[in-house]
Length: 126
Image (cartoon, rainbow, N blue to C red):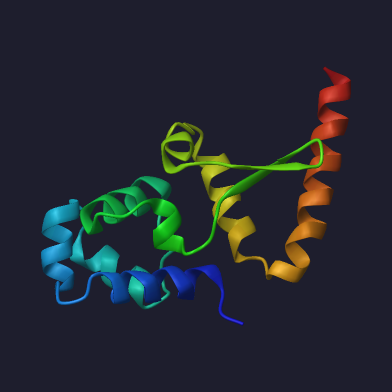
């Protein structure tokens, strides 16, 4: 199974089609070196970079990562659109989301349950 880093790099390479990395860099405002690193699986794109690349390609961030973004709340799943994700100001939260995406799908539910437990403990202490 490929991980998130490989998938997003592959998606960018496929979606840019005939555009060169240099052309995509110029359109998106992201350096060619950064795009190359993402496509090679060497770099995890920050959310602002992923959004800039998606915008330059004329797609949503959901289409870029080829997976729906969801948040679990009281047993229900709600889709989060790219505008809502873009509103997240704390880079630590963004990085946590990216890291969660890297966990194999079959283990991700366990990680979500652990995180929900930790958040519940923190909320009880407030």
